[in-house]
Length: 399
Ligand SMILES: Cc1cc2nc3c(=O)[nH]c(=O)nc-3n(C[C@H](O)[C@H](O)[C@H](O)COP(=O)(O)O)c2cc1C
Image 1 (tube, rainbow, N blue to C red):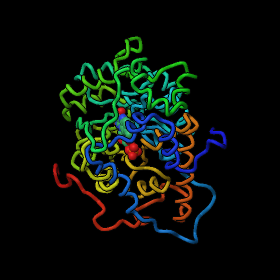
Image 2: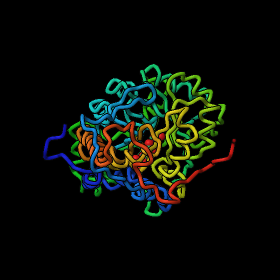
Image 3: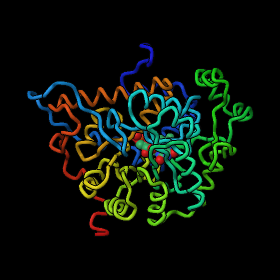
Image 4: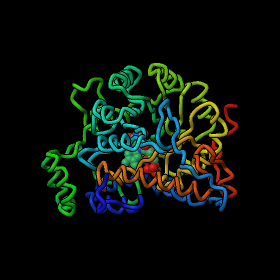
């Protein structure tokens, strides 16, 4: 746990601390977003449009029920760690995140672009789902997936929403291929302003890793660089629904498709690919700009397939009340991205635990205000959903 002086009371404060502590380029890489940032902003604004319906008397008391099951695992709360490439944020990177999630009883998605090997992350938190993009082709995918299986990953996440849009109006940070002495000198003015960040690495006797060790079939193979792997991915032909079904079959265990925003594609994921779960997601606004907030697409998708698969949501979760809103609109659980990245930057494992605690206590106080003690009792009547809020994308197609 964080020592009391380090404790922060909101995700907004974690972000302020991250901004103070990280070199500008690293901070901006986490801020991310694409083009004009329309989707990035809508992911946050949409939650603000949803109101809560309070209840004064009738709260049952007797503790809160926050636990649920996701992809075959019991989790202590409906908040999971979404996969992100946590490059150069903290020397312990995904290991710190995995330990925090384990300590708080929840599961984690580990990105194939992460900086720590899946074997180490699974030993830090056995409730780890390995996330991959479609890279190379079937044979190449098998190598990546088999390694995750041997490492003991509890599930597979296939993320397909990426359009290789690399520009944004507020400028993209320069990300080096490797951090060596030459790069450190180039970054010297930025780094000199953030000695605490460098000190953490100096204490850990390492430099930030910009390699992706999970992109090889064996942990013994040399790890490719982030950009080497990214270039391979860019050149890969995209998968068909048959490919998705094939991968799900080869994996054999719990399988999530991440990035679904359309009702027709949610149906195909269930009917043609046989997935266990989907995450309604627009990649945190880092993909196609102009796509609506994921929470706007959630109700139609939950109505269409919620009785057949687990429907999760990610994008814009910053407080416990946001989690409650997503659950009331049909999500089984949510995944968080930036919220825990700010926590990681602010305080390593303790910072991530701090964020999970903020969300947990925020859920409890929201539930109490709604007069409910269990997340399983939430429904749409707990919310004020303004007219025109929803986006029912791809509804009617494929029927
Ligand atoms: C810096 C950064 C890196 C990310 N890397 C990945 C990734 O490697 N794989 C993936 O499926 N999603 C990735 N995402 C998307 C997140 O998993 C998640 O969908 C998104 O962050 C949710 O939105 P939020 O940040 O508003 O919570 C990344 C997001 C950020 C901000």
